[in-house]
Image (tube, rainbow, N blue to C red; front, side):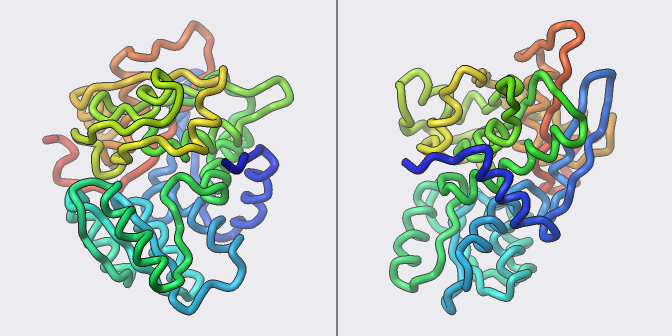
Length: 309
């Protein structure tokens, strides 16, 4: 497994500068910030990894790029490919929300909807990439992708200074691993609270097993946090001493999503609200005076469901 470092994250930040947005932070209480990555191009942090992967590759093949996704990664790859003048082919599982499928079509991607879960779509995408020679952009388990996602953490520290704890959602783990790397400081760095739904505990199961293992996929976060196995790169980082793994219920995610809308007018998808759910439900309780940042990571959702589901 290829190691990703803090310097790789810094190199990614230089490479993708001008291609991605510097998303804002919102201090909602003294010492408590929301990092609004849901305002990023294509509605999630995923474009950071997509741009870093494609720009690192140099000249893109004539056959373009290919990716498997629950939706957000596909949207990011399609957005990035269009920005760089390349074709994109995206494989998504059947659980992908209609909002995300429509978004892919609007970005001009060729869409293949196949498989019940992300892993089945990923297998089909890998086979297609081998046939066409297209550049494969993995959703979470490529060094360039992890380093790109890590620029979120690098940016967060630049914006608010020293922080004690960062809460981030986990699916395949590339995002939380990137944030852990991006927030490294000479003294070590903040605690990373890796939050995942009880019904998709990829990291939690991997930590208990001593390595990535398959888990069942279900629940409200399945279309964005639906990886059935944690990535190897993510395990390498997230099994370290700075990381705490916590689980949240679907009910807590739904409540957090509703609260983000009602209190702050932030239209988060369920996966985007998962990290906030850990805080709101009390699964993670900050100590007095602790400086905490919560990453709200995705907005690709049907706005009509913000107060009903």
